[in-house]
Image (cartoon, rainbow, N blue to C red; front, side, top):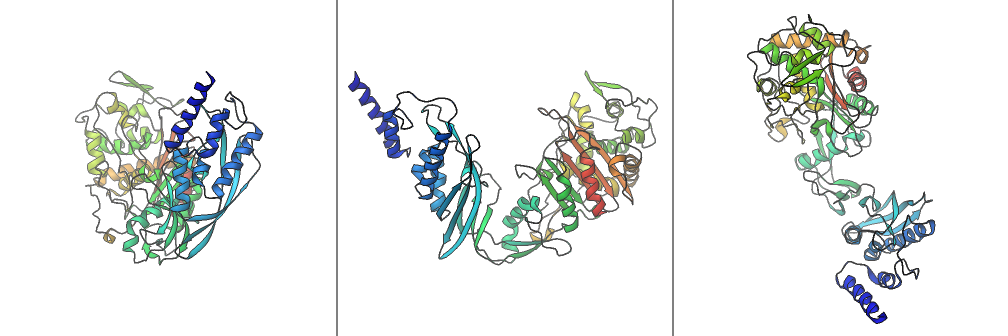
Length: 541
């Protein structure tokens, strides 16, 4: 009986070794003695103890320092994936001379600092950074193991990423703003992904020569490498952008008011993007690429549709009852909003009365596609043809029947926009002309800007006046107070599945600058996104 068990265990060990999982000699001993080297025949359970955390992390660090990727990976709970990245660390990234200094453990989490050297073709540069790891109990083995995450190896790594050191695919760029100020991710942190994309697209066109870099290589499509360390300087090419250093600085500071926030500012008379900033943990450029419901800021487009189709006008009727029912779905207004059956469109707009818009969406000659046509033909949205210079989403306002036809009109339903789109909507609303937003000159790569016929001047003048009233007498008063000049705004909040708090939206203008912001915190538009936009307009306008 005992012989049979012993043979089975030995066979199991050889199966692991032959299979190339990279467990090594330590695992032979572990398998024979029951795991963890304790001599116990039963796997342990529960969170690892202090001694186990110290022992596992020490063994992992020691193997990593020696460049023994296979052994280091064997102390993790995902040996094959860990082994591949740790191997690339030494071979593809050319990182050696690793010295790891652990900090004081907090429970099962161990902070540590790394000092190393990156060497490539005779050039060596020091590398240092900090990271953390967590020790967990192996589900089947009962061993104390490092909970594998790529960020253990470097905090800039996510799933699927790896590290490489080589001559860069494209030269570095020196991005400059409209007044000649050099724009760097160190000074303007949320520009990091934007600058990386501009380099990827225009580095070879800006006149520079490539250098050698240690970089994070991402597997996500259209995501350029993220440089971490420059070993050999290339010659950066100069790339002119439309960004304003002062407006960008204000935008960077403004989005820090709330987490998961984004803002874009544009120059309505030209379409030039003056600022783009995000305050997000994931590094996603939601300001340009987000796809979320815009809430009541959508009423700018809906009001334009009503005016252009002769349904009503700024001073025409738009009654605001307590509730409005459209095809079995009942819509309500914000709490404590008083009904006004004799309201004009201007009054319904400045108070952001949902029911006033819902009551009008079935008026002739409106159809299920009227809002879509207004968005596409007048505001240039939803045709997937914007050429900003980087990846962007130009909105979606699909033709919708049933309850979504009404929901779309107040920025819910199937409508998806982002701050770039909404800043452009405001620019079109106040000038009457659609000018596609852009970050770098069109002639740099012969891009063709998207076009739309814009608004009749009568419609634009009414929209601008209604936005002025909203900023001075309506829901945007508090956010816009203290701003001089010609000002206007529209607030919005959008309910999102899975969120307990509505997304906050705000778009506004001051003289020849339009800005729009969205934040997943704060609820009502005037309370959260409003101050973000106001801060940008205060500097830019």
